Image (cartoon, rainbow, N blue to C red; front, top):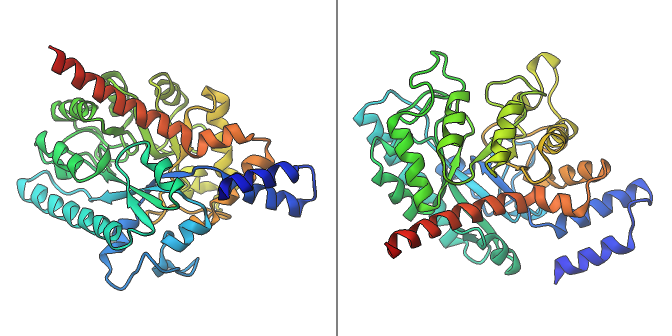
Length: 371
């Protein structure tokens, strides 16, 4: 009902009015959208017993972080993927064990806040949950595993994480692991793409209905994943290499291949991936929307979304924490983006991919049961 009223406001206050009303118009538009951020590292903050996600923290305060429930409400962020991040260590059985223990601890903390604050947030595990929870006035928390390192070399671990609510795995992080090569490993390629275990991982994720995330992966890994995966894949928090020549970003050819696969590039707002360091300045909201423009012009408006990387380095001038997300909508509207296009970018594109991954898994399961 509330968002219906906001849409009415949009109809009676056209964009052609004053700049002040234009800002009001974009705020109302933003609140009428279903909004999804596919990557934040806020679970790391949950490790601090003195930090409380349920209370508002001061914007710009490093200790307060970028995301909490009051500021999610301020920024009308309906759903967020909380990344269970585990850093990279040498590939030993002991380090696998330690990584799994850390991942389990972070997962437990995410589950705990969903239980303790169940009147305000809900753990989401299916694509439709974002819409269902928004209709009930609740925020949705999805879970992603950033770095496949805790899988060790056990395919069965993927199902274990799926049962704990993980719905995407970022295959690697800043250095190579047992699954694949990273885009930023200083020693170069180890596997020249996916390893044999990495290939098994992608197939198992397809089988379960888990999204395969190619952010952080090397170019060779990216192309291996796109060729192998039976379902669309995502880049949960990456940008365009044509605008910022960083190995973490996707080239135009990679963006085309991602789109051909039916996947989506979720735009990161970490300054180093948005503009080159050589510019000597920090990126702004306008720079982020330049990347969105680039994807739209290159492959269309169905293959781009938002994955901020808040609490993992994300934040630009004009959008430094989750409360300022409406400024992205304002800038897109300033450039003439329609409500239909905004809805796609803020959530519908990603939910389409998520739903297709789920449908592929369900169809494969049905096919096996019919044999």
